[in-house]
Image 1 (cartoon, rainbow, N blue to C red):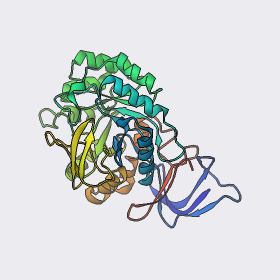
Image 2 (spheres, rainbow, N blue to C red):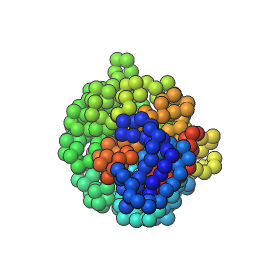
Image 3 (tube, rainbow, N blue to C red):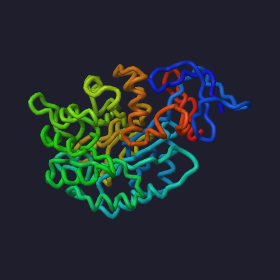
Amino acid sequence: MIIKNVKVYGRDQVFRQGEVVIREGLFQKEALPDEELIDGKGCYAIPGLIDMHFHGCMGSDVCDNDSEGLQKIADYEASVGVTSMCPATMTLPLAELGDVVSGIADFKSDSGAKYVGINMEGPFISKVKKGAQDDSNIIPANVEVFREFQKRAKGLVKFIGVAPEVESEVALDFIKGVKDEVSVSLAHTNADYEEADRAFTAGAKAVTHLFNAMSPFGHRDPGVVGAAFDHPEVFVELICDGIHLHPSMVRVAFQLFGTKRICLISDSMRATGLANGTYTLGGQEVNVHDGKATMVKDGAIAGSVHNLLECLRYTVNEVGIPLEEALACATINPARALKLEDRYGGIEAGKVGNLVLLNEKLQVEKVLING
C-alpha cells in the first residue's frame, strides 16, 4: 500500500511532502510494483497516537473488566486517531485489580486500537493527594503485590504509580526492587523536593499528570516538579484538556521539560464521547458538565472527558505549541516511556504500520492500524 500526496511527519519532527509505504503490517522503505495506491489529499500523515494514561470512554471503563467494554473503548480510540493504548487502573481492592489486569491481558480483538500496556495508577499512592481515587483501597508499596499484578497481567504492566513519602523507606526499597521490571511513576503524591529526588535517584522514571494531585511547584520547595526537572531521564505526563492546567502552565512545562520528556495524555473517563450527566469513576459518582468532570462528594476534578486528539488540538491551537513539537509528545515520547519505541511512535521502516491522516483542521480523515 502506498499513501501518496501527504505531508509525512519524520523522525526529525519535520513534515515533508512525500508518500508512505505499508506492507505486511509494517512501514517499508520502498514500494513494490503494483502496490495499492491511496491518495492522501494533502493531509498530514502522522504515526498513530499513543495514549499512555486514560480510563475509558463511551460509557465504559477498563476497570469494568468487561470484554464488550474493552472493545467499545478500542473502537472509539481508533476513531480519534489513537492506535495504541496503555489504560490506567483505579485504586480498587487488590483482588478486583488483579481481575482487571488479567482481563486486559487476555483481551483479543481484530479491530480498534491495541492494548500495548497497563498503567497502574494505584494502589500505592497518598491519601493526602488521592484526587478521585478511593482512599479505602490505598496501601503502602509492596513488591510481592506488584509482582502478582504483573503475573496476572502477563507482563503487560508498563507503569506503576508510587507516592514516595508514604512509608518512605518502604517506598524507596520498592522502587529499587522493581525498577528493572517496570517503569515507576510518582503518582498522587505529596512528596517534597528531597523525597522526590531520592525516588528518582532510586530509579523512578516518570511523573503522573504533572502539577495535578501532587505537591505544589513552589519557589522555596519546588516539590515533585522541581525534582523531576533535575533528573533529565524522567518523563512527565501532561493533561492538556483546558481544564486540568492553565495554558500558561502548559507553556511553562514545555519550557522546563522540552519536547523529548513530555507525554501528552487524556486521562479520559467513561463519559468521554457522551453527553453531560452523572457517571462513575472507580466506583464513585462523577458529574460531567460542559467538558468538566468533578466528584459529586467533594467537587474534585475526576479525570477528563476529552480524548487525546482533542488534547493535541488544544495544545496546538489554544496553547500555541507548534504541531511538530506537540506530535512528538503524543507519539514517540509515550513509545519511549513505555519502552516500545522499537515498534511504535514513528513512520519508520520496520515499525508497526499505524498511521493517521489529519486534515488542516487536525481532524481525522483516515486511520490505519497494522496497515
